[in-house]
Each structure stands twice: as structure tokens, then as C-alpha cells.
Image (cartoon, rainbow, N blue to C red; front, side, top):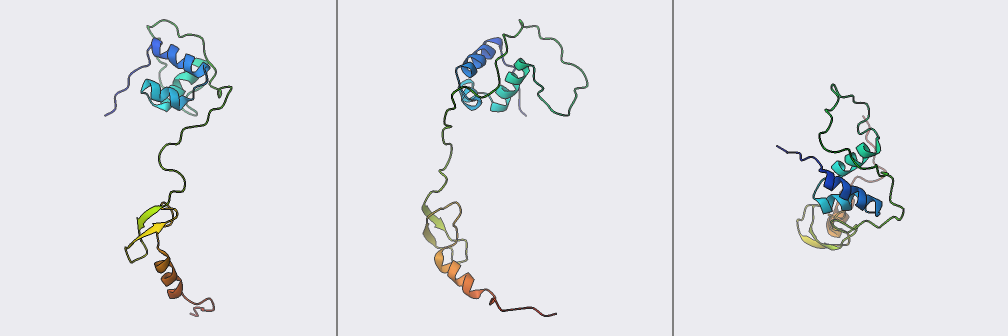
Length: 138
């Protein structure tokens, strides 16, 4: 079961300051150890924008006891776009993989995420295929 922790006024100020400084939502989420979707929703609420489309709450939310939120910050992209840091594997990584074509041998693949059949099995599969002039007559 997931527990949710509301964003405190101090965190709200920090979110707004980081966003105004040009940080991306993902960077803010990592810094505050929160989900990116939670940060995005919080910024939309502060800006007075709808957070859900097509859904209406049965009851309105109770007014918060905490002091009124600070002035809204635009959810638009920061003025200077930053390159996102690469997460995970690079697009094309060469490496050794196990052949999924039938032989099960380890071979050097130029792209181990997409090329998973060794050249020997690929050639064998092409040779075993039906000829191009073959037609099935029922």
C-alpha cells in the first residue's frame, strides 16, 4: 500500500524557486525525493489549472488550514532548455548476447537490444524459408 505525504509550504516554496530558476520537473522531483507527477500536479494547482480532464470530484476539497500558498509560478518550460541526462542504457550498445535463433550460442551483436539472432541462424532461417515462387493452391 502506498502512503501519500502532502507537500509542505516550505517544499512548495522550494519547488517554485527551483522551477523559476529553470529546473525541470524531473530534477525537482529527484531533489525533493518525490514523484515527477506529484510535482507537476502541485504546480498546476498553484497556477489554477485543471489537474484532471473529464473527471469531476463528488465533493470539493476541504479548505487547507495552512497559510495561503505563495504566488503561482508558470508551469511552462523554463526559459533556457537544458539537455536531459541520459538514464539507463545508451540507444545502441554493442555487446555479447545469447542467440535466440535456435543455436543458443553467445555472439557479438552490434546492437544487443535489437539484434538477438546470430548471422549463422539468420542465414539458416533464410535458407529454410519457402521459395519466392511458391504458391499454395487449395
